[in-house]
Structures are given as C-alpha cells and as structure tokens.
Length: 326
Image (cartoon, rainbow, N blue to C red; front, side, top):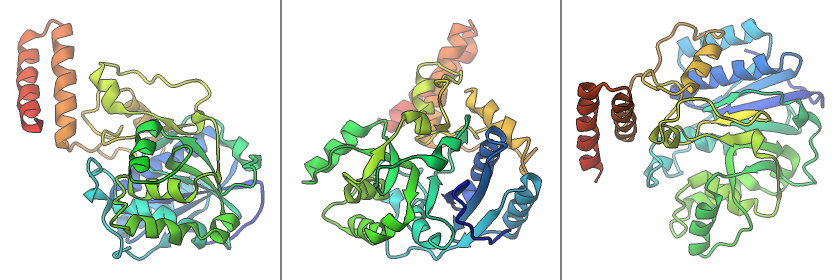
C-alpha cells in the first residue's frame, strides 16, 4: 500500500476509521466513490488498530485494481476511553469510531483537508464539489443529524448549550484549524467525563466542542437512511433524492446482510462485484433487533401475497421477539 504525502489542492483525501468487521464495507464504499467519480484524483487513508494478513492482501489488491493510493495507518487501541457500546442502544457502534478523532493529527503532513467517512456509506454521485468548498473559516463542513432535535435536547438537559447538531459520519475537516483548536483532546475529555455520560459518545463530544465552528451543508452529502424504518413500513426500494452524493445507512441494519429484502443490498452487491471481495458471501447474522424488524416485515409481506401459512409462521416469530423485547 502507498505511503505518499501530497498537498495538491486538486487531490481529495478520504479517511476511514475501522476494525476488521468493517473492512469489507469500507472497501465497497471506496469502490462506490471511484465508480461515481472516475476522473477525480483520490487518496484513501485507512486507520485501524490491527489488521489480518488476508485483509492486507485485499487492500493491496484494491489499490492495484483502481490505481488509487490506499494508505494504511495502524493506531494503538484507545484503552483509556470507555467503550461506545456501553451507551444505551449503541451496541452497533464499534470502538473504531473513536479513531476518527486521531485522523487530523495523523494526516497533518499529507494534506490540509480531509473527508472523513463512516464505513456504512455508499457513494451515488459526483463529489468533486468538495475540492473547492468554502467552509467559511470553520473547522469542518458537516450535515445536520436526522435526529438533531432529540439529540440536541438530550445534551441541553445535561446543562450543555449548542445551536444545532450534526451527524459525525461525514466530516470535511480543515486540519490546521482542528489542530489549532485542540479538537481531539477536548473531545476525548468530554467522552471521558462521567458527569456528562454522553449517549452518542464521540458524536456528542464533537458537537459540543465544535458548536458554532462548523458550516452546515446540504443533506445530500450525508443522506441518512434508516433501513429499520423503511422495512417497518414495507418499503424495499431505494428512494433517495437525485442530488444525493452519499447514502449513509444509519442504525444497526446494514445493506450487507444476506437476508436484507431492501434494494440497498443489490446496490451493495453491485459495487462488491467490482472489488477484491467479489463473490464473498454476505453477512447472515441477526441481531435481536433485526430479527424483530425482519419478522415483522416478513409476516406482513406474506399476508399481502396471500401466503397465509408462511405469514402465520413469521407472525409467530414476530410475537415471540416482541415479547422478549417487551
């Protein structure tokens, strides 16, 4: 893998913080970006605590297949920070999420700006507009969180003050300003504060530290797409606005589940087929929450199709899971 520094303003640096479980989704994210931006000069950065030899081989192959640098950055485990999975309802968030806080410092010799992305994102549009985006002298360009009001209210109840609330899955960062304002250390202090007890960990912390120092940009840069809500309503088609650049699959349900009946799975498979992970089986694990949502979707779907016996079987599974969750 490459290890080349460049400050060319026509090069877009894109960084991820992942663990082994998210390497494949991240790889598919990279493929989707390249496929939708074939003429864009891109440099990718992968931050991870440890990586298997098989995954190294795949990343090397990814770099060769698309002739785009993929820089691997190994970081130490942040053992002094509480596990984000301890937050209520946040078990799907990996400790790797904290790695995003280290990225600006690590890339200070590579570039002055970096686009941070979560690994549960697919690119569906032209992102070249970021190269010359004016962020008004702020530390980052961000996109409002889909649940901004409730998350902001939760922090206000803790005695905090902030004007708005952004989703930290897509951050376009001015690195010198981030470092000048000591964002990393200040955010880690917020996370470790037992009095604050932040529910959304580093996302809450970044909102508090960067309040008033971000530029909010169009939601097409981070179209937050909850598969749980879609399936509850029986909606299986990809319904995103035409100006969407990134589709961010928020929540515990992801497009790479083998049982996923949503069209997002086909979109994921389309890009996977072009990658070093081509032909690899999708994830067939269920979380308890996913079993609940999927069984609800299936019994309704079976009844609508007149498949009464199958519908009753799935309805029984749904009631069983509902009873357990209750």
